Image (cartoon, rainbow, N blue to C red; front, side):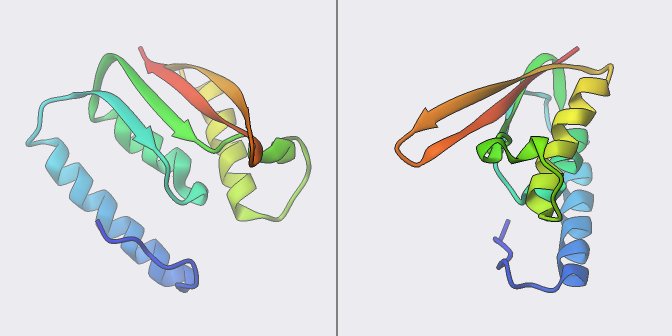
Amino acid sequence: MTEVPSNTRPSTRRALYQAASDQVATENRKREKFQLVFIDADKENNWNYVDIALGMVESGACIIVDNVVRKGQLAKETTDPRIAGARRVVENIGKDERLEGVVVQTVGDKNYDGFLFAVAK
């Protein structure tokens, strides 16, 4: 799949996301189930990617979503769509009965962030 430049208009991004989602759904019917999914994409759609992935994994599969701690910004009110998307995926996985999840904070030279580790039930 081709990476979409960050300066692409929102309506174009939505159309590309929908096309990619349709393609994934079609491929999903043709493939065996996955045991691991790693999501490191546009943060605004992280929950959408997790929801799609749930149809592509077997019970017990791991779903990892990268960059969800966002330097602790999830706890603050913000208009940044990347932070809102990261907050949405964390909250939704916490509420979704199909998953068990935990957020793991990482610390490195570039400051701190983290990932969400979820297991499909």
